[in-house]
Image 1 (cartoon, rainbow, N blue to C red):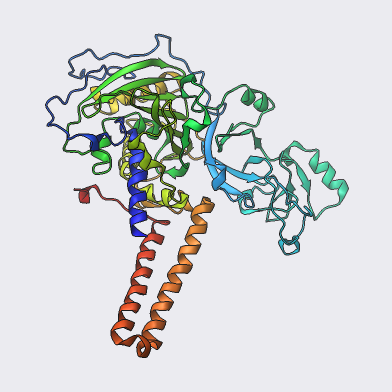
Image 2: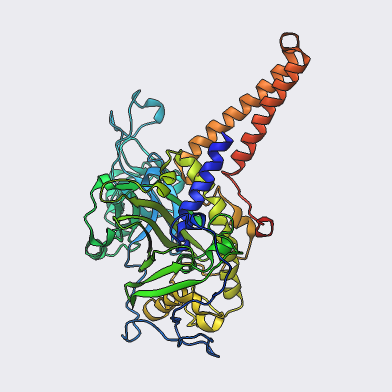
Amino acid sequence: MLKIFASAAAIWSAAIGAHAFQSPLSSLQRPQPPNTNSRTMLQVASMEPPSPPISTDEPTVIESDPTPKSSDFNWLKAWHPIVPTEFLDAEKPHAFKLIGMNIVIWNDGPIDSNPAFQSRKERTKGAEKVEGQWRAFIDQCPHRKVPLSEGRIEDDGSLLCSYHAWRFNGEGETINIPQIATSELERIKANPKSNCNSFPVQIVDGVLWVWPEASDDAKIESALTPVPSNDYEGEDVPEDRLWKGAWNFRELPYGHDYFIENVVDPAHVPVSHHNVVGSRYGDQSLKISTLKPLTEDGFSIGVQNSVSDSTSSTTFNAPAQVLIKAPFGEDGARQYLELYSSPSRPGFSNHVGRMVIVKDQTKQMPKLLKAFTLPLPIWVNHIMASAFLHQDALFLHGQERSLTNYGTYRTAQPANDSYAKAVLPCSADKGVMLFRDWMGRFANGYIPFKGDTTMPPSDNEVVFDVWNSHTKNCKYCLTALRRLKRVRAMAFLASALVAAIRPKVLGVVGSTLSALGFSGLGLVLSKLIKMFYRYEFSHADNH
């Protein structure tokens, strides 16, 4: 069991670690030579040149489309990723946050036998829920503004507010209020205030996207706006050449813009992810080029490091997607990291990501990528992701709060702060400065959160929290957690029984060893169970 978990940790970490802008596992392919040339051969893109200028061999310039500053991007009129639907329990409403708004995600499918409004105790034996449409509402009952996420999904496919039993259909319309007469119900239904704010939703590659605006034009505008996806650069790749890894998701303890900043930054990877992807003591020189200049739609950079002959690409498609591609050989094989993010609330973001492998033209999987395709349980991948994600989270969580609290760079409120002045950028920060330039030129320099825009304080316990960021919303992890707890209880019970009543059969030594074995299993399971709730990481201990 422990070998499986260890393998899962290594595989997941290496998979997500491909955003190191190295070819996957490239640090294992050949030894890293001493660092004889640590400078990067590129130009810095920044919102404005820092003062004094950065000393580099090439001039510091803004590499972007020479169009004037635009403020046309509207965060409320865009698609935002929330969660892969396969991980949600379709029989329960789920609470999420988006741009400071509390939203409830739920499925309006009825059960397949006698779909009536009735107690679950009266449900027909063997009846199963039919998957209807996934819905996204503001998490407020129109009646007294209590959270609908604390309600229920009934057998007829309606959403029930558990406070006074008001019920709503998938369009957000009030369909029943049990305490009043029909005539009053009809008057209330005719009042627009009785409707929940129902947002447009799309499911693309299994991920639920929300358009967080409920005006009369929202359906039309959202239908005309494509949801970002991996189009394999326009190539029509047949399904039998594709291997798609399991999605992962969680609410990260730092903002959406800091997530994007992190995944377009190749320089941090061998340092932050030492012993997982690369080494902080190896050659970290980079060659970074601009593949697509900055526009309101995003940008793309190419990255080549000292241990790989090929060039990977990193593409930011505004505002939610980063695609990282690493080629393998000359026959079309390549690896993608599909990384998505949305602003959940000040200081936090919704992250969804997975790996996709394109086999070569002969439909063969490159040998170095086969390790990523081992059939591991989804819940193992999910809990082991913390071993990688928490390495970055420690820095980004503190960075965002420090810049905000000192008033030098704030993106949760309109402040017109300069990132280039707030930090000390160097030429290796090209992707970072291009993104910050996008924020300043095309997105008004901030995310317009609803409600309280105060930045929460720095707290490593929030960084290490796995339960609230992931487990409580993942049906795979919740099921595995329940089963592991049962096995742990059985192990401790077996240990006690063997020690107490089996000495005459097994002998003193045999009984003692058996009891210790069952106790040891219980302790191992306790450590594993803890990872569903909390995972702590220390860079000082990562030698």
